[in-house]
Image 1 (cartoon, rainbow, N blue to C red):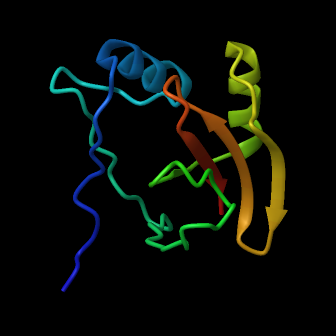
Image 2: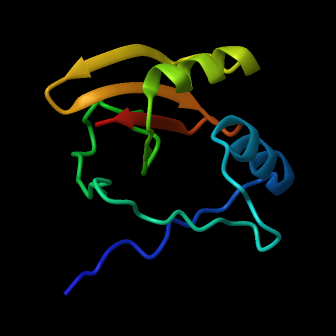
Length: 115
């Protein structure tokens, strides 16, 4: 029944700051309608997963965590260091891939993943 995700939508207190941050930090082309289209590519996966209310994988006060799949995590880390965006946790490698975490200007933890 489900073909795929249609989008991720949330409210922000400072639209201009958030658009600029996601554009500069994650290199997303945020258009005039305040969004972008991320087109799936072969080998890309979208995970839909539930976490219990007290799971500490991401902050319990944060209802949703974004996870973006990246081509090259080391290249992403170099980009983040170059523009002064600190990692919230160091790179982690597991059977699921390589992960890092950053925060957006409103404090949302974002996971970046190389499969």
